[in-house]
Length: 410
Ligand code: NI
Image 1 (cartoon, rainbow, N blue to C red):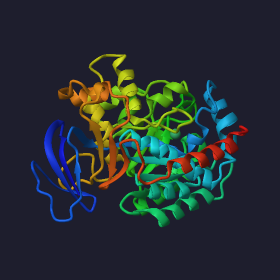
Image 2: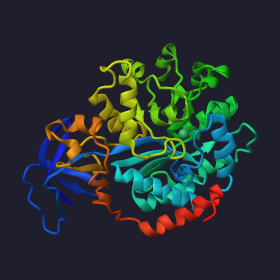
Image 3: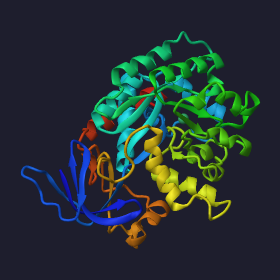
Image 4: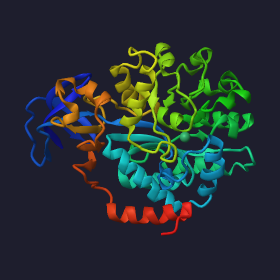
């Protein structure tokens, strides 16, 4: 495939160029490339191509619960509403819930995400069908009793899906230190080392977690020795920041604000050279999967302390390059050898004017859908439509399952 006449964000500069894609990988970038025999040509005159965005924390199937539990304290929200509703989720419901979140992400330039949930086999199936990339984990909990069933499910998921089409990978997802015993966490770390897989966990999201243990106690279980994506880190104190060296924190400011958990210490992390990434969290606690909105709120939250905090380049790296590193994927830049994972914009879009300040306007002004999103050289969203799914059918099934879970009669 040849993408012709567009402008691409190479490094931080917009350059007019054509992009040749072979087997989902960028093969050539140059001005005026001549189409080969039988090569599909996509004319991108008036379009801007950027690396795709990476959402490093979500629970995609929770779109079924969007808007279901609002204005409640965290514990009441989780234990009183969300967990009881989740008891009713079936594998098929999870499939359709996942598709709807992926449609929202794709319409906003997201090409890859990290998920933690259950019936994760169906999330994998939805990712396989839809065409995004994902690092999937089965949420692991042993407080309240576990017979290793969840861990076994996670390993089964790994054996079945890890490496699928160079798009789906499987990691380990202990839910949180407050829902896992230390011996369980230690067992999970051992498996992560043996199988060489990433680990992700909700980490100091709430102030009350400090009453149970310190971040050092948890990290010392072995999280330093594995590829680790700690999620939230909202409550970390200045002296604890260096514990995150070498990890890829997923910052979910919107979810933190909405659930009254505070503002994560992003500026302090950046000062310490920590590679932060951005996550939306699930649609029941955000409630959108538009990652650019999350990024902007995260940036503004830091700028509320000082306008020099969380600069444009840092924000863009969090959205792209660092996200790829977090999910242990190749990519995040437009260069030969990178996967053809792109977000594509209309250069004439009003919120991007003046387009010479494209990156600044993308971070600080743009709120709309993208023109198109491509993953491994294949469009998953283009000009308002989704080539890989039947939208009407998905939405019909989704509504039925959402009503079943939340108990709302149709
Ligand atoms: Ni979460």
